[in-house]
Length: 75
Image (cartoon, rainbow, N blue to C red; front, side, top):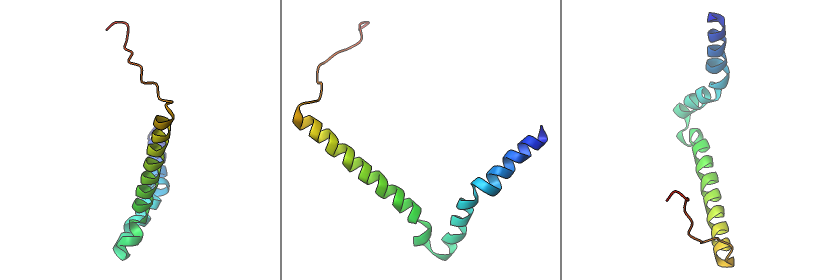
């Protein structure tokens, strides 16, 4: 059983966290390069948010939104 947990530790520490270790080492050399990943995530999130809002606006202007007020029967 101990070997199983050591194998899991080996997988996470030496394989799955290797990119994070590389980012940590890169941060000492160049802050901009190390934070490029964060900037990419922020950009993707902003683009997705803008796309979602434009889709909501187009459905609202077309009158496709169901605005009927309904509630559960127990209320």
